[in-house]
Length: 167
Image (cartoon, rainbow, N blue to C red; front, side):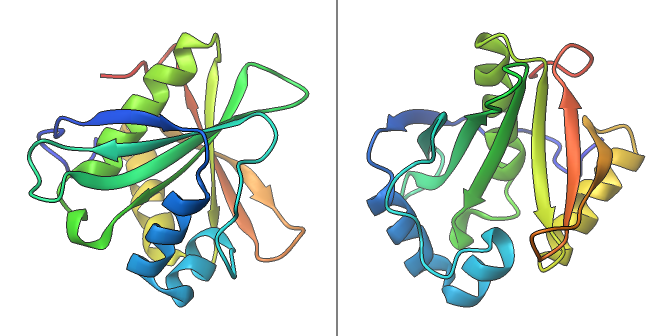
């Protein structure tokens, strides 16, 4: 499935004013990564309509805060929820991307959602390769298509929450 053998423990706190969280994340990753990963030239000040945001902590890390994720319900089909996530640079390659995804899957399923969806920008080839590899080797993601406009191009991956519930 994934290259992660053990999923680290995490704790989440819902963030009702995510502007500061996203600002801190932008400072940690820098403007180039912010643009290539999320398409943001500056971090948003508020969540989008139907979006909820969580700050993620881990007792296994000295700094505790390891990242964030958001879930946005599709406005036309409540069975579809979109996931956006970010792991802080000093917490990468330790399994937190998977841990955030599992917690997001759990929370999305609890709302009655059937599908968890991610859009990966072509300007983020490392993340695309990782998710694409997982989709080809038994992981929970399945490639569902491409979004051509607006640019940059986005690959769409979907996780069926019935076939692949959170671990």
